[in-house]
Image (tube, rainbow, N blue to C red; front, side, top):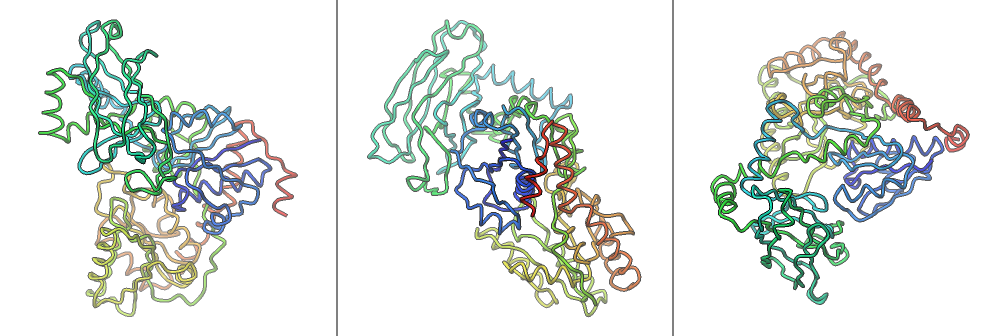
Length: 545
């Protein structure tokens, strides 16, 4: 059976990518013909090494990056299509399809949410506000202006409160191709009929205005769908669009504005674009009505935790089959005696989902001030080159001055492995100080590093929010806290009570096996089997040796 597994962020090689990669390994070893689909050239050997996977026989396919609706045709080439890309719902046309969900994007299905959408649609019609549909990439900013790339055929929907009347429109578009390519032909069509054509000269950072009319006989339904047609190219082949050499999309023209030449639309621009731009962003940021249809093309939806499943039910009105990420719990061998070390692991970056290293340093500093002696805090994680992330790392270093805090930035795996196997306590604080009900995405959706630390013999002392409570049994395999005082008190209990620490340590090691690769393998094959896809046992045996 031919299996396609999609992940557009493959080169980040994070936890979500290992989740997807392990699915590729399992299905390849079950005898299936597996392709990993991404858009940036990658090496299967490097991927195997980085993610510690056996991907022998797995191929990488790199089609152009297109809007999701235009990738649907590709999925029909597979007997089973698995989408393992974060918040990337490609509509599937394969006979069988599985969606792996790290965390669901919000679709407000509540009565209030439905009312907001009705109100917004009314404003779209009355103020002639365009909606960008199939064939468009997401909005970008350049030099203070916002624009969207088409992918060769971009559709724009306009509703008019005057069906049957002529609709005067204006397009503001640009071509950012090399000048020596010559002009780019752009055609504007409605219902298959071309209304306007223009040859766009290269206009880096500049745009061309095109005025035209949609005849009254084309507006009788009250809706008009413009189609902007142009040739496409892949910017990375030419050094990148707008200076981005890693742009692997297939793009057509840049569309800065689509507007009706009418006083109502001018009112919209004055109110929503100039005076209250946040309202304009909300109006354009309506949940895409196609999203629910795309979700319906999947036979099985697999969230990575009960926490993600709960929000999937709130956002999408459905529940999935939980498929916990595979953690290589066999890679770590607990060693004794344990060192008086508290360990925290996670990348050093600023942003909504950061690992709260600064909060860990503050908590540790207070413990030291209150009498904890002989203990060290070790923070391990990769760094990111952007200035704001470097400022965050420097802020953490400043907070740690004068304290027994050790930073292991961009440390090799051997350093992390040694700490997992010898440290006494593991801290995880992602989401601390955040509102779980109002902003759930900033919390831990699963928690791979806590499970790794547990398998290495660390006692987990974790924030009791997000998916972290699913990883342990309180008082048996770890402890949970919600406030700074609870955090400090529980840490002191483990640090000063050897019997408690040993009991929790044994429980943590045992508990970690519930999230191991063998459990993942069995559960995935069970899910695939329910779809009527048998494993080739003989092929599986030969590959595994």
